[in-house]
Length: 290
Length: 249
Image (tube, rainbow over all chains, first blue to last red; front, top):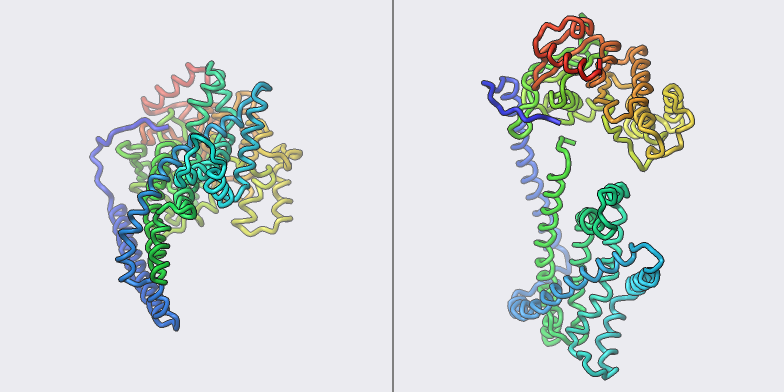
């Protein structure tokens, strides 16, 4: 450990330091130039290869038609709003339910055996069940029951199917995180007099959650894409909006538009988590050049 | 005088606004042991981390066998291949057996064939009193054993220079002896070492050169007899008095 000593000496950089820094700067400049040149060359080569290939004109007409892109974009964006709402609601529910399932599986003591068993069975079942089957079952199967008080809205039912499947995935992510926290942390917490639940809440979970943020984000991005599957039940989301236009025109540009819109939605989320984890690392770990 | 293995010239290092090393000079002759002594925060560990290029220095220069290693054009990996380090907290790889810990660098960095690397590793482990432990995982060993494995790992690549960073600070008192006796053996083999330590008795016994650091400056440098027996500087005297009062010398 180092006791901070403020710079109060009359320090002047030596000639050696100045030369060294000049060398570093010139190296940085060279790297920038090399990167720029290599990027331009790559871009030109890619452009030439793609535009000169035999099928390009037809590919461009079918998938990259500017006219249809302009027609599709407002419809797709209107549909996307549904996807975003689904993502937010389902995402929140998935995180809560997933965490509860993970905690249920870590409970100790014979009393909790049935709870552990149920949680394990739930995770095993819904993690293995193809999402599309789960979705078809809820969206078309549940209304066929004609039960009173059960919604028939395909969006709600589709959301339920997504939550059922994704909470199983997320539960496993949380559980993996909890198990990577070293037992000594639990021992330290318990020896301070914290109860098992308090140790989990204040010591284990905060560390576990930080560790699993990247895989969690992975699942959320995946969930975001799969919100498009509610279109099979006839809910007009971004995918269905594109499908309607394609069905009328036999041009596939609207699908490309819808796809790009989804991609554009995930990128900021990825950058955000990168930034969050980088900040966490900076705070918690020692510096150094390796 | 022969060319020093390690030479520091006016090394300066800051962390943020904190000045940790303010112009340190040091020469380490071949086959000698240099002990860095001083209070916590005096810059001992930072000095070792800089010498191994784990930290980038702000100013000054460090030379290994006469070649400047702080030159931006120098290859840090090539430098580190020639310097062994033992850390205070052992830093063994918990997912590898003792034997794999020791043979990792010889095999992956120096390209020694597996059988040969293992044979040499077993020889070293044998000499460090760890003969039966090759197949164990580090967490199954005592602190003293783990630290001896860390030393075996560092010397397995036959480094030109060995840096020991308070290697007994995390050990129980009764385990300190076994680690220090290993260091004594290394000295007898002619290993060049720089040791940051709080074990004054050990420094006095084993070091050819003792350096007293305080607030990032080398205040006193000389043979063990000079620094411990007849310190010239008031700061050194004060530091040694505190050590004696604490019963550590």
